[in-house]
Image (cartoon, rainbow, N blue to C red; front, side, top):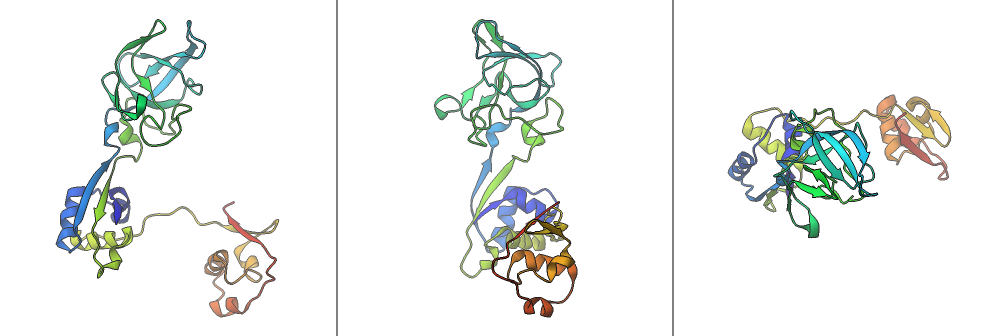
Length: 257
């Protein structure tokens, strides 16, 4: 069973250590086969703000960027991505850092270089180059309030561990994050709670008409998932719900307004 340390932290509302998780599960009869750190190669990558973009004087497809990486001085970076924009934040690999996916799919160490006569001190990165996505057509634009210079692993929830648990046939309750989290809660003597979910939809749409849950209940197909949600909202009782009927041609959708 593959388990995410971060997901377990959401159940228990506290930070966890992968080695401690392994020891506690082993004591409960669920041995851990492997602990695999995820995105560990991003430790040197930082959040950077592009303050200025100008055309490269010697190349049509290159741009020269002024980058704020949190240091006292601004960095000049030559970039070939078409979506680089002043005022946006991107992952930045400074000189000396290693990008997980470079040329040929191998890790690449960033060095100071000259590209068509312009010095470049670092690299603005795409999601593919960081090994967290497949999009290599442009830079990974970051939607974060983190200040320039913040480590990427601190700004985004990328730091995680994959924990492979050997679940025996007599413990099917451990075949999921919920069961594993309940077991750890007992071991740690801490409360166990389901993670917070997004807000429930407040209205249901029937064809092209917007209806409140109570108004929609009478004609909602009793077998649909949307029907069960409406029933919980209006509190009218399950007996009347099961007795209702709706023509099979009625189409229902559910959305948040």
